[in-house]
Image (cartoon, rainbow, N blue to C red; front, top):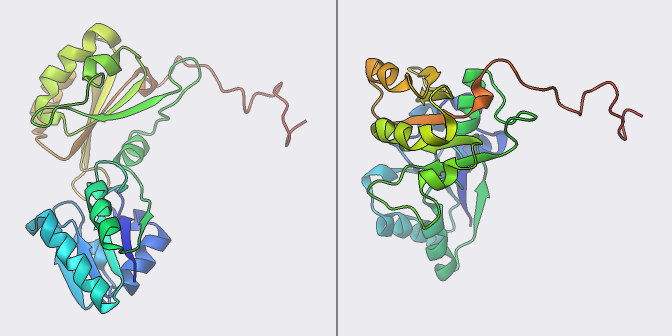
Amino acid sequence: MTVYFIGAGPGDPDLITVKGQRLIHRCPVIIYAGSLVPAAVLEGHSAQTVINSAELHLAQIIDAMQLAHQQGLDVARVHSGDPSLYGAIGEQIRYLRELGIPYEIVPGVTAVAASAALLGCELTLPDIAQTVILTRYGDKSPMPAGEQLADLARHRTTLAIHLGVKHLERIVEELRPHYGGDCPIAVVHRATWPDQDWVLDTLDGIVRQVQAKGFRRTALILVGHVLASDGFAESALYRASHAHLYRP
């Protein structure tokens, strides 16, 4: 028996991995994050038991896994995006280890990757940004020392900010001194869902645009000069003068 932590991807059922889909179809027990994972991801399953974890607290989720373990039944624990990022799997894994229950993590497509695809951009460009920082906005849950938004913004590289759209005005004020008011910023709402939408503007103009759209939650913020459509250098990899193992 194994508990499989499966990344369902950002929303579009076609973006789950083949392995993840196969496990959902095969496992006799499914525990899924119903507030974030669309029901279409579970289509085709033959599970005996399907549990929406949005209605449960941690102890109840662990109890369900432990019961499945006692019965020798594999569990598909389905999370949105990639479970290693803001998936709250660490606390579940800690209990599974204590209980001696085997587990495996099946990665998924992240909201960051889905948002970049919708925007039609690359998040790392020569001479502009070779680093992507994934973070969240600390409001009710404080950030660790050295991880305040202003600390990260000093790098002036590509930023992906989760759980921050409600605090967009404050975020813009914290970013502007480091990136400048003309820096591109995108807010992507429910990437790859049927009602997906997004806004691309500058730090100076984004708040007005997002207010007009009415985005309140389930949105990712991307910031950085990589979002501009021109003015960047070409990579060395495909330069005609650049030799390597496969192109001497």
